[in-house]
Length: 114
Image 1: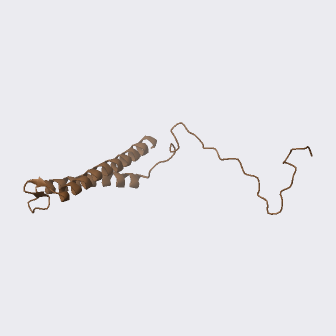
Image 2: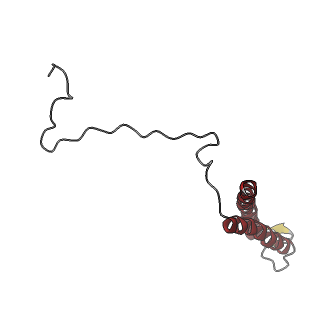
Image 3: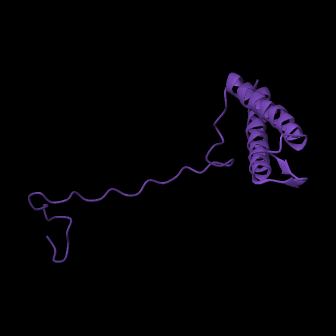
């Protein structure tokens, strides 16, 4: 036992075990998700959801612009109701697009591997 070493000293009762070394991340050429594939049904569902979102919200925005009940426009000026629902539609367009693209990429990846 040399002076100044801790390897040979047993831990005290109730002592803390030595820390294990940190785990290393496995880096691959394509990133952390290179081996990840979506299933065919899930890819089709995501793509269909994206298309469905666009169809529904385009119809909603058309109806919002043509609104004659006074909710969306008051004396020709847009109301808060109009702006809130237009914002909802824009966010839904963006999310529908992103989800649809994920589904499309999943289908393309499955086609390349088959």
